[in-house]
Every structure is written in structure tokens, then in C-alpha cells.
Length: 393
Image 1 (cartoon, rainbow, N blue to C red):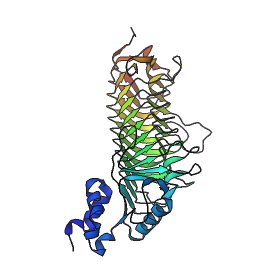
Image 2 (image 1 turned 90 degrees about the vertical axis):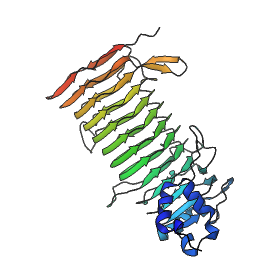
Image 3 (image 1 turned 30 degrees about the horizontal axis):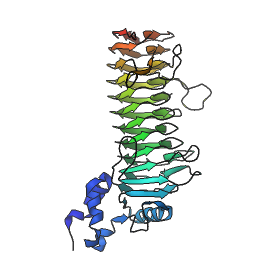
Image 4 (image 1 turned 180 degrees about the vertical axis):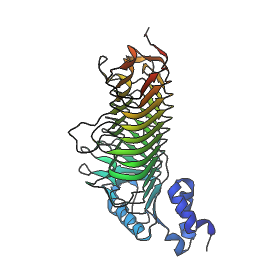
């Protein structure tokens, strides 16, 4: 029996998209030709139980390796797959049914970490062109500094990575939700990185699309690039309740930060910092950033009120930055609880060829709307940032 609905082109699309089409493909395997079934490896047919008790590591890795031989896909039917570290392979799609909710993975396809001595749950180091779609990754707070998804490298590869992480939840890991070292050319879309002890997403690399994600309640920053980093489009994300900065870049180059909602950071909402001069890479400032159309709210939850950490935006030693058309608002915890913050709206210092204008700070800070610490070089425009201080009643 042959059905054009399940030809190679259609299944490739299904594997990338996950969801109902991939589930339908898996459920009808028995009625397809051997040529069709070669496109898809069902993890349970490969021996994985998905019962929340059995260690499925060997079966899952075997399925991934078999898919790599044909550059095809592994499908995870809904269930909880207990596993140690898995290594994804080039041009392989690992796809499931996304049914996770805001703070837990109660349904759908779940990978749950079984080992306290892993580097990560899914290792993408050698997975050029791979796709992860529709899966919840559960860290269970095991071990120390274990990441959900990671590349583990000391140097950049000769080719673009080209991998895609889409519609996944990565939660409760003792490291970062996603930790990408020496990665370039990739996308992270429609995902939730939540309640990890490190950052939601840590980047050392460049050429990234980070779109339409949640980065919520992580122990460090929501997004952080502390090592060399460049060329990132960061758009339409909700970044909230992280214990340190919601968004931190040190010495980066070429960012579009547009249309995001930054809420209740532990320290600064959006921070661009100069790279320490004792570092070997990109010594100096963040350069060529566009920060436009963002809502930055309730920053500085854990910051000391008289320090720069209690601020909505910090531009420290930046060059070529446009910071225009953002909305800033002070506040406190949900339900009118907790301390009000932040003390300061926008803090600027040591800028060159930057524009900070037309931002609205209505109730934008408690002590001072805009702090200009000077030290600027040529071409700095700071004007027309209206607002008022908020006085808690």
C-alpha cells in the first residue's frame, strides 16, 4: 500500500513540525510500505518503554544512531522516557508531541534525566543540521551543573551548526536550560527554558535566531552571553522572574532586541556591559545594538536599592547602540506583594555614537528615571525620555 501523503518530502516536513502530523505518521506505520517506514523510527519499536520507570538510554541512542544512517527521524510517542545523556547526530530529527504546560511536563513526549553525572541530557556537539521538536526535557534537579541541551566544544567547527530547537520545554536542570558553547548559525523558537539553576539560555557563539520563547524563573540570567558573541536576533520573547539579569550581553556585536517583554528580573532588565580587559576575546564594549519596542517591567527584585543592579536598562561602555521606543515600568510581585523596584530607569556611561531617546518611563523607577554617569565620546544623543517617578502608597 502506498499513500503520497506519507512520501519522503511530507514526512521530512512532519518531523520538523512535530505535532499531529507526526503522530498520525507514527500511528499508521503498520499500513505503510517498507520504503515509507524507513523514513521514521518509532522509539517504542526500537525498544524504548516510555513508562517513567525503565532506563531507555540504550534504546533511544540506538534509534538516533539508526536514523543518522538515513538522515531521517526518531519519533517519541507520548510518555516519560528515563534516560542518561543522549548524543544527537547530524541531520536527524528528534520529534515528539508537545503537551507541556507553563510550569510542568504532565503530558506529551518527555525525556527525564536519569543520571547525576551527565554533562547534559541532549548533546548537540556533533549534530549539524539536527532538529529537536515537541519534547519536554526534565532535569529533576539532578547532579551539579548539568544542562538540558548543550554543545560541548573548545573551538568552532568548520561548518555552520544549522540545528533547530523548537517547541520544547527545558526545565529544572542544575546547569542552564540550553548551554551553547562555540555554536554558530542556529535557531531556538517557541520553547520554554524554566526553573533551571543556571541561565535559561547561555550563548558562546553567533548567528542566532531566538524567537518567541519563555525564559522564566532561572537561577541566573534569562539570556546571557558572557564570552564571545555576535549577530543575534532576539525577538518576541517573554523573559521573566530570573534571579539575575533578564538579558545580559558582555562585549557583543550586532544584536536586534525587539518586541520582547522583560519582567521582574532579579537585577537589571537589559544589561550591555563592557568586556573586562583581561579577557582574550573582543576586548571592549558592546557595539551595534538595536533595542527597540520592548516592555521592561519590575526589574531589580533582588538588587540592593542603592546600586546600579537596581535598574531597568544599563548601557555601560557601548558603541553604536540605538535604544528607542521602549516602555519602562516599576512594580513589585504579583498580588501586590514584595518590595517595589527598581530604583533607576536607564543608566548610561562611557558611550560613543549612541542614541537613547523616546523611551517612556511613566512610573518607570523609584529614585531616578535616567542616570547619566558621563564619560561619553562623540555622537551621543540622550533626549526625550519622558516619565515620572513612582511613589508607593
